[in-house]
Image (tube, rainbow, N blue to C red; front, side):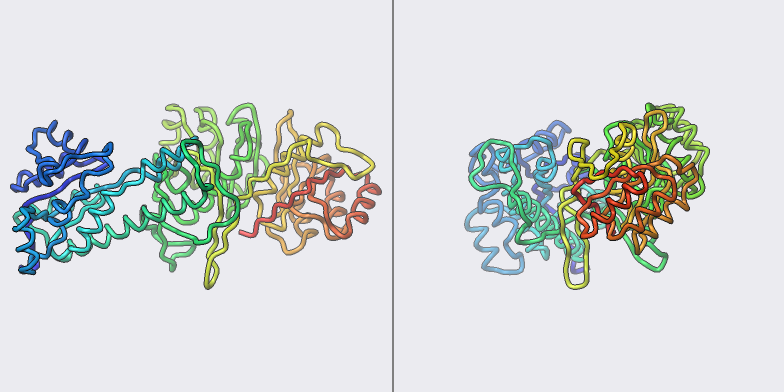
Length: 527
C-alpha cells in the first residue's frame, strides 16, 4: 500500500510513563532507533533499551533547568521536513539533521497541578509545557510523513499495526493521530488560558486568588471518557466527558455493577451535591434529581434509615448518596432496597462484600470536586453562573414573627433549608428532628405555584406532619402558601423574605401561631 510509511526513528518524551516501556519495546523489536530525554530516557535504559539522547541528536545540551531541550532545528527540522520535497531533503542533509518518523509525547500535568489545593502561581507556571506541545504540533502538521502519539491509550493499537505492517503505519492512522494531537494541544492551551485568566496580575510565588467576574472568553475543553448506551431517552445519543482532574462524579471509580446511564450520572451528581452540604453524617435518596428523603444520623445506617423512612415508595429505583464511609451495617440495610447506584467517598471491605451480592448495583467511590461554576447550553449560546455555595448559619437568621422558633425548631429549619436548596423550584420541604437529627418528612418539588408545592409536599409525607417545620426556597408572594403549610401541621417556616407582601405573610404567621425565620438568600433551582 502506497500510503504506508516506515518508522525508523522515534522521539519519546513523556510525563505519563504508563505503558511506555512496552510500547518502546515494540519499536525496538522492529528496529526503530529510540531518541529520548531526561526521565523518559532513564526509564527506557533501565528497561535495557538502547537510547540516543536528544542532546546527541542536536549537538546542544539541555539547559535552563530543562526548559530548553527539544526546541532546536535538529529536532523540529527532523520532524517537519517533507520527504517528497527535494529542497527539504537537501536542507536537512546539508545540516546533518536526522529524520524523525514518530513523536511520542504527553504533556506536563498542568490541569492536575491546577487542581491541587494550595497550588502557587509559581508551580502553575513551571508546569506549563513548551517543548511538548511544539513537538506535537510539528509532527501533527507533517502527518503525511510522521506519526504523532499524544496519549498512552493509543499504544496498544499502534503496536499491533506496526507489527502487522513490518514497522509501517497507514496514512489513515497518521491522520487520526494528528487530529488527536491537535485536540490535545488545544485542550492544554485552553486549560492554561482559563486558569491564568482567573488570577490577578503580577502574582509571584503565592497561592493564587481567583479574580471576580466572568471570563471574557468561555473555553470548554473535556476529554471523552466513554460513550453511554443512550441519553435521557433511548433515541438520544450520549457520552461522558472528563475534565481530567480525577475528581467528581464524571471521574468516580465504579467498583461494581452495570454500565452507568446518563440518568444515573445526573441523579448521582444531584445526590452527591446534596449530601456535601452537611458536615455531619448524611444520606440522601434521589429520584429524577429531587430528594425522596434525606437523613442525618450518628452512623450511616441511622442516617440511611431516616432518609428511607421519609418516602420508601419513591426511594425504589433511586440512587443513594452518602457523605461518609459506608460500613457493613449500612450496606446490609441498603442491600434490602432496589436502587440503581450508590456514591460515597469510601466503603469498608465488609460493605463491599455485602453489596457485591447485588451484581447489577452500581457502586461508586468519589473524590470530592469543588465546583466553581455551572453552565447550561441554550440555543445560540451558553449560560454560566457561579455555583450556589451560599450557606446560612443561625447567626444570619432574622425572626420577624411574634413567636420565635425554639432551639429544636431552629435546628430543624436549618436542616430543611439545606435540603430545599437542592430541590427543583418552586420547592417546599417539610422536616423534623428525630432524636436530635434532621429528617425530611415531605418534599414538594418543581411546582408551578408555591402553594401547590406546599400542598404537594404535605401529600407526599409518609411520616406525621404535626410539629414539623418547613423551608421555602423563595419568598411567599401571598399568604396562601404559608396557610397551606400551617394547615399541614408545621409550626415554623424558613424563607428568604423580601416579598412585597411580607407584612401580610408575617401577619398571617402571627395569627396562625407560626414562627418564621428570614434568611435573606434565595435558592431557586431551575435545573
